[in-house]
Every structure is written in structure tokens, then in C-alpha cells.
Image 1 (cartoon, rainbow, N blue to C red):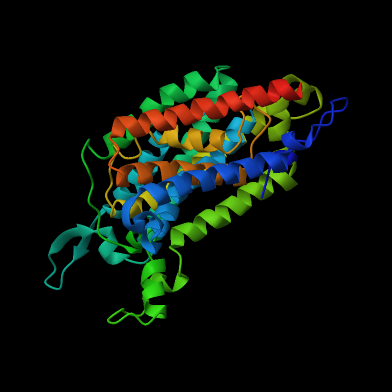
Image 2 (spheres, rainbow, N blue to C red; image 1 turned 135 degrees about the vertical axis):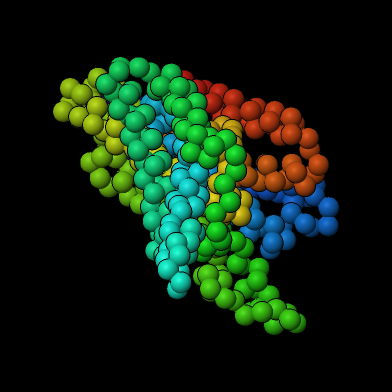
Amino acid sequence: MSSATDNPERPGTAKPSIWQTPWMNMLGRFLALIAVFAFFAVMVDNGRFYSPRNLENIVRQSAVYATASLGMTMIIIAGGIDLSVGAMIALALVVVAWVLNLPAEAIAADGSVQTGLLYDQWPTLLPIVALVAGVVAATLAGLANGSMIVWLGLVPFIVTLGTMGIFRGVAKGIANEKEMYPPSTWLNDIHDPTFVPFLNWLQGVPNAPAPQGLGWLVLPLSIWIMIVASLFAAFLLRYTRFGRHVFAIGSNEETARLCGVNVERTKVMFYALGGFFAGLSAIMLYSDINGIGQPTAAISYELFVIAAVVIGGGSLLGGEGSILGSIIGALIITILYMGGKQMDWKQWIQDVVIGTIIIAAATLDRLRHRASS
């Protein structure tokens, strides 16, 4: 996958020591992941933390953060920020529920008009339409972010701080400020656990049913979506002109413009991609909360997503970051969150720990830059 090596060395810069190479930095992220996991594996009683069921839950929960972090990785590499990612996820989630709840009229056998749901007439097609509508809504929200940043000339922090409230407000407006309960569809199942039931069936556990439907995928469909999305994002950053332009803008925007990079167009594109990946994340969250259109969902997710990128090696100064690193960061955040819950940490303790890790990661990044310069 993409790594910090996607950013080529500038002419005239000193060759970094082996301890400052991208591969050593990535090894450090892996070691941090192992250390955090080992801590909770030892501290949580009765081996509950490394049970197959809990391991699958960690991967499932981290997939939501990791998928949203793919777009945030591009944004932070380019020196930007997006505080509205949680609100975009909520907007996409509500749009999915709204589409599934669309009313429809049908003519009964006696000629009377009966009111029902469009889903009753199109049970296979409408969930697909709802999925696409949710992802498109989030993509358009990201496109709006990029367009305002470029055309209004405002800093990303201010624009996305404002749109965080706007998108959340639109989601509440669509839902009439209450939860929506659409009919159950296959979208409810894409994030359900499948590995443990498959393992029980494979081992011949008594009364373990054979996998049905999505259970034959072994891993939840959402994990496969995350894997494909991660490969796509890594390919964009490492092997395309767009990816080179993202790193160039993050390294030095004015120099990139002088070299012929269309900075404005590239900014709009990676903010739109940020919305796209947030929309995919919303589909996973929709399944995780049992198919409820919840306008207050994903509150504080911007903290987790940004933390995943920073912990994974993304520099808030721009010019550095990787898809693999962000996935590792998402796993670390999830392990901290779930391990804290299993150790009965209070919520404020979890917030303090995650906030401290963000500051520590940013501080280490700054010290590394000073050492290399």
C-alpha cells in the first residue's frame, strides 16, 4: 500500500538516516500497535480481549474509522483538514434510511388505493438505490467543502467547522429531528459478524448452523469493502498523477502551482473523495446500529478519524502520510476504545488517553522533522 515513500525526496536534501526512513517509521507504527494490543491482552481478565469474537469485533469497528480515514489521509497529506467527516457520515446514513422509507401507493384487488412503502414494490432494487444515494450525498458534501475552500479562499479549518454544523443540521432536518426506522434489508447485514459463526461451523461445534447468505464470505462484507477501498486509495496515491499532485501540494503549494499542478482542481477532488469514503463508512455504521436512520450518529468521529491518520504517520504539516499507516492508526484507536471499555474505564479517561496519544504523535512528528532538517 501507499507509504510515505510516495513523496519523493527533494533535490538537495540530505539523505535520511536509517532510523528516519519510511520503512522504519512504519515498523514503529506496527510495534506501537502490538504494544497496545499486548497491554490489553494482559490486563483484561480471562483472555477475553484476544478471543476470536473480540478480535472480529475490533476489526469490524476499526473498519468504520479506517474507511473514513482513507479520504482524510489524502486531505492531511495535502496540508488540509476536514472536521465535518462525522456529520457527513450521519448525513449519508439518514439519506439511506430516508430512501428506504419512501412512500408509495398501490392499487388493491378491489380497486382501492393503499399507501405503503416503495420498498414493498422494489425490495431488491431500492436498497441498492439507497446505498448509492447515501454515498452520493456524502460525496456531494465533500465536493461542497472543497469548492468553498477553493472559491471562497478560506482555510479548511473554518470551512469544515461550519459545514460540520450544516451537514448535521441537514441530516436532522431530513429525519425531522428523530430517529428513522426503515424496513430491514440486506444492508443491515453487511457489518454483522461472520467469522466466529463460520469458525464454529468449520470446527463442527454442536448445533452450529451452516453459514447462510453473507456468512460464506468468512469476513463481514464491510471488511471486504474496506480492503477494496484501501487498495483503490493506495493506488491513487502511489501510481497516479493525482497522488503525486496531492503530495506536491502538501509539500509546498506555491511550488506545486509553479510546476503546473492545478491546485484548485486537485483540492476539490480530494475533498470530494473524502466525502466518498465517509459515505462508504456510513453504510457500515448503518448496519452496525441495526439499520436506524440516526441523525446524531458519528458524533466525535472526526476526532477518531483524524487521530487514526496522525497516529499512522500523517503529518499535519502536510506532505506525509500513508494508507497502511492510517489503517494501523484506526486499529490502535479501536483497541484503545474497546480495551478501555472492557477494563471499565470511564468515558473521560478514554477521551484523555486518545487526546494524549494525538498530541504525542504530533510532537514526535515535529521532533522527527527537526532532526531531519
